[in-house]
Amino acid sequence: DEAETILAVNNVEVIYNHVILVLKGVSLSVPRGGIVALLGANGAGKTTTLKAISNLLRAERGEVTKGTIEFDGERIESSSPSDLVRRGCIQVMEGRHCFGHLTIEENLMTGAFTRRDGAANVKRDLDMVYGYFPRLKERRGSMAGYTSGGEQQMTAIGRALMSRPKMILLDEPSMGLAPQLVEEIFEIVKKLNEEQGVSILLAEQNTNIALRYAKYGYILESGRVVMDGEAKALRENEDVKEFYLGVG
Ligand code: ATP
Image 1 (cartoon, rainbow, N blue to C red):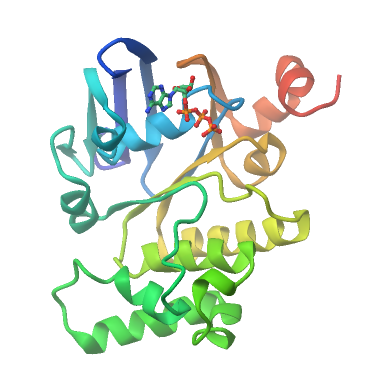
Image 2 (image 1 turned 45 degrees about the vertical axis):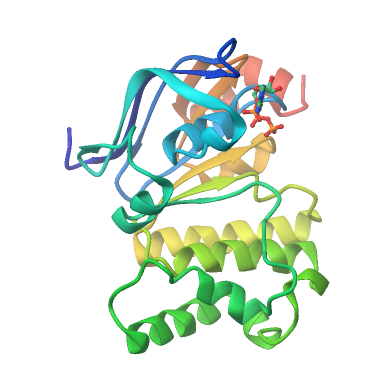
């Protein structure tokens, strides 16, 4: 049902370089205001799925060759990435992708490039971002390239928030970070979801933490969804435990 579903991916196929079939008919949906996890091993197709949604495949010589994608009630397969940002759907890329030679605050401000609602509103949102990430406020004048991995991940999420998104596609936020910091970041993401109503599609190899914060999960293997269900049910599933949670 349209009002309740913010993102619907239907039977999407992705081919790289005209020959390499990587997504073999992926379907998933995210309810408005929900947190959904996209799980799977390295190479399963998580990043490709997010990039198919945000139309970032072209730079990698990839294309969606089948299926449909709907965001907020509209088909988006042919929307450009910046058009999608304007509509409220933004991706936080794997590996953070900050501008290393800009300060944290300058990085955050680059996230407001699609805004047309004036400096006062942008300033208010910058304060909102600093409210969620006090650490970024402390380090606002530091060059992003010299800050820690955790601070860069926070900057990347904060930058996305500056576009006032309805939905964030979050690619592997735990990557390369210490467990304590991963927890800190997930807590903030949860608060953003609850307080700002931002819907989240979260691609994670860290099944354990993802299923603690998401309400629902999809497991990808070789470009196919092999299992999906409520997070609680997945956590208790014997196969998930054995293959993805490291307890057999
Ligand atoms: P990771 O955790 O490494 O991001 P993933 O689940 O996100 O893994 P993808 O990055 O989507 O997986 O990759 C899925 C498959 O597509 C892999 O087999 C990968 O080698 C292949 N692939 C990714 N990008 C390209 C590309 N530009 N050209 C060809 N094949 C690619």
